[in-house]
Amino acid sequence: MKSVFIYINLLAALVLVIPASGQEKFQPNWDSLSKQPLPEWVKDAKFGVYTHWGIYSVPAHGGPDYVRNLYEGSRKDAKGVYSYHTEKYGPLKDFGYKDFIPLFTAPQFNADQWVGLMHEAGAKFGGICLIHHDGFALWDSQVNHWNSANMGPKRDVYGEIAAAVRKRDDMKLLATLHHGRSFGYATGSMKTDDITDQMRNTWDVFDPQYKELYWNQWTGSPQEFSNQWKAKVTEVIDNYQPDMIWFDGLRGSMRNDHPPESYVLDVIAHYFNQADATGRQVTICNKHAGEFNFPGDVGLKCYENGRDMPTDAGPWFLIDRAIAYPWSYVNHKRYRDGADYHVRSIVDVVSRGGVFLLSLTPKGDGSIPPEEQEIMRGIGRWMKVNGEAIYGTRPWKIHAEGPTVTRGIKRNNKGEEKEQWDWRKKFTSEDIRFTTKGDKLYAIALAWPANDTLTIRSLAKDSGVSIKSVELLGDDGEGGLAWSQQDDGLEVCLPAERPADFAYALRIWVQ
Image (tube, rainbow, N blue to C red; front, side, top):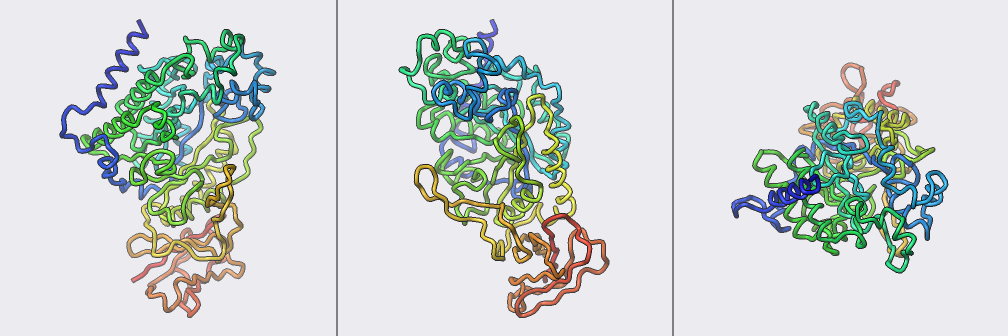
């Protein structure tokens, strides 16, 4: 009876995305969807946090692509996943990917603690990756029983996260959905000739009873998959009403009709119309706009850690990255970068008219690694002092000055030359980033000057900027700072005590 219930709900969900009349504001075509304006809250928020966490966090090896690396691994052993798995858990005929689900009990998961850490870091929107390419859903789904409320944690993980976010009136809710790439993902590049009788008869990935977890051509059809994709996204929209949705890699999926472009258009139109009817401002994230997801004028352009991002991307755009790679927690994970790296990235991105999105990588038990907690709290300490120069600001006439170049050209594995962004450069006190809000101009120095005197060349006497006063955010001194506009720049005498550990923001009152 449960399967009948699931498909009744599937059909009901599909009906929801079919326009009842021609009166909806948004129609299911790209031209109509491009008319959805980017919400002001996105422009003001600047910083968001989410997580990559799921079944793959239990084996904690290789990353969130564990399922693909596992079943392809008998030939490739990518990231050593196949050998790791068979040595630790046994052969695939005895222990497949699905067998991690009973181990995914998440006793340490606490939505209020997760969202509390995001909020402490200064995030103005937050959420989780609700479903990765492996197809296991972290919400209470009536569409597909492979979900966290039905098995594993036996909790509506996203529902708890959404409730925790909604408790905070200065945060918006994010949902990221990666399952557009799930059809054929677990089996990767495997062809029929690669599958032996032994594999077909004993590997769970080829067992039809698991087809709605391991979507592939041997156990299910693209049409079945597409219907569920559409129904699952609609279910998330209707039940949780996220303020922002991230779709990962739909362009390639649409080319293969799983899901077809018409389904994607229907879902986005439904999302926009539902929000319009309830007076909410929402947007979709357009990863690598025009190439990876949707036409470039739809939603918010997004670039994975700046990959393929043009120099003149903003405003407005979004940069996303993991707090440390890979994208999910792995055993003996290394943390190459501290809070300073992420803060300087935020400053640079915001000055260009961008938004920064950071992903945490919780452990399989649901706890946030202590290294990540410390990084987040470091970001939060900086934001408490300097957030005024970030939140609610807009780009100035120039975004930066200084000698350090954060971009260059890198050749990818296809031999193509692409622009590459690097925020690990060693910045100097001459590297300044600008933001503005009303009659205040903010100049953020990415390092402290050796002689405690900061020179801002873009604010020289002939710059046309008339300055009334200059203050250092976080400075307890009275009456502002000593300053003078010289021929070669604005010279500011900084106090002896630094108000933050890295990156220092001046509030410059202009007339």
